[in-house]
Length: 170
Image (cartoon, rainbow, N blue to C red):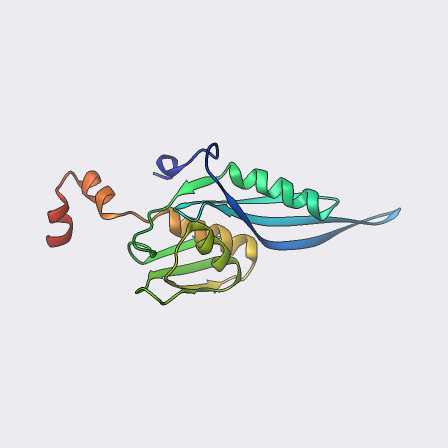
């Protein structure tokens, strides 16, 4: 099911958000070698989002690599009236996330890494809770997992082979 939601990055205007930069040290007999890893989320704020990880000796190179990686991992997410269609639970490694739809004017109630992902998708009103690990890598992947499992009413009706009325009434 995840493959049907994948999107190509060509002809989409994507905005990138930096989630985290981490300085990594490798100790050798010649001394310490520093490098940087960057996590970036890209999205068009209209239902398309992707995440990427880049590692390099310099921060700007790491961010550029992360953006390129994120453009290769894009997915389509249903966004209805500025919120998500239903509550969803996502998990990746030790990170667990719960996202719930919210009424208009609520805003994005989410922390750190989750906020970057949800804003990149284009969700305006949502309640979100991150449980378990607070590692940004895992939280971003758990949030993407939860978003990739979302289905709108039209998709549910098509999968079940019934009309839209049946989805809501029975």
